[in-house]
Length: 145
Image (tube, rainbow, N blue to C red; front, side, top):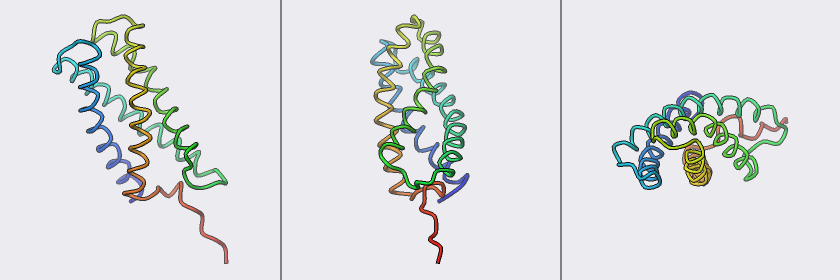
């Protein structure tokens, strides 16, 4: 599976699992009810979807220009860290506002979620690539005959 179809399936599966798990985490860590936490989880998911499409497009463009093909553990880790770092800048103010907590508390909450999502993103990407195959940008180049 390649192209836009791959991206749509990826984002849909990733975010459905992320919303359910982050609602639980946000409710437990913030002391808010599940209904209140689910609203910010859905908003965070919408932000993450847009960021995901933008970030992965840039990452795959960079990846396609690399001489070493494939997705090593290091490349996967760099991908996950870069993605989550961008989300911090967008989500901390949202969490502070919606959950009525300080920016510091929102950052601490987000750091806990980041720790979870770093592992989640890594495992999800590994499983996704094993199930659906690598994208064209990570596949080995054909050998010249």
